[in-house]
Length: 216
Image (tube, rainbow, N blue to C red):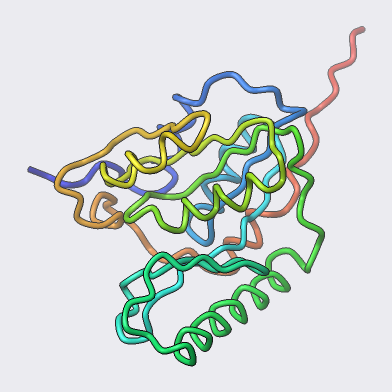
């Protein structure tokens, strides 16, 4: 069976927008998971006329296996799901290297602007797909500390096991596909290039205000 579900991230976002229920733009914010989720969040935010920002969080990987996630790191918090065989020194080094990258991205993407106020808002987390779900699970934990009104997750596709873990933790889980077998997010896109820093920066530029239509 052909594994391709989407031509590219833009096509996936176009399809995702169609399943997002009505929202209150004054009390909603889109947060993109870097880097692939940021242009998608910005595209949705432009259509829904809501602000967009970035949630600087990154999976923590084992130094001996860069593809294996053992937790996640934000600018000021760390979550360890599986310590594996790492020593304290190796674990701390991995955390510091990951956080240093996030600090660099904070300066580059957001110019160290204050994190947006999420209190009593509907926060929609957007990513280009969910594999293990560990980064997104910790993103939800991080957002919940800001006391939002609701947390939604909007993704084009997810591994079924990850979806089962995430869905009970959010108010809405908006997902177009949960393919089995799940063979990696990129395998379901015909075109899946790495999102560049320039694309992220452009995505985070404020949307122009809606035109005011004056009655004659």
